[in-house]
Length: 191
Image (cartoon, rainbow, N blue to C red; front, side, top):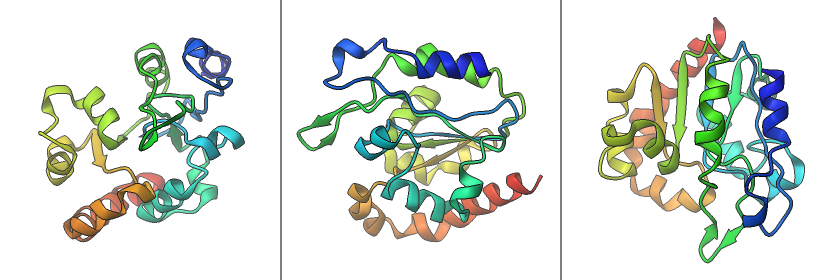
């Protein structure tokens, strides 16, 4: 695991496609039981090198019912984005995750975490990559059918402030999905 993490953190395969220095951000341990797969680090995470160290991470931790200390304990929770480096800004927000990372690194990391009980797929990029044709027509339909992907995967929208409208327009998510998600996380972390 240490070798894989060191290789990822020194990776610069996408250097020529970024307008800044690569800074891969990932945490994992061979004892991780929960894996959170998000999109890609934002600018604040790029600056600090700490995954989910932004308002999205704050909301995700609220959804999970845990604090930063528990969240950043790699022995329990691995934080593995689809793209390990900040992709840069686009016209309407951050660019999509770099496509090189997941095929190159995800399987290598996951095979070194034999105790993983749940993989949380946050947003459309991770859901498309991991669910493939099992994914529904769009993110809303996929999240509505979250139980179809259990026990291996739990699908969520991205907790970005940019998704506040989606959260407001889909109150069923907070009422029906989040309590089950929080309970799964709590049960898993108690073991």
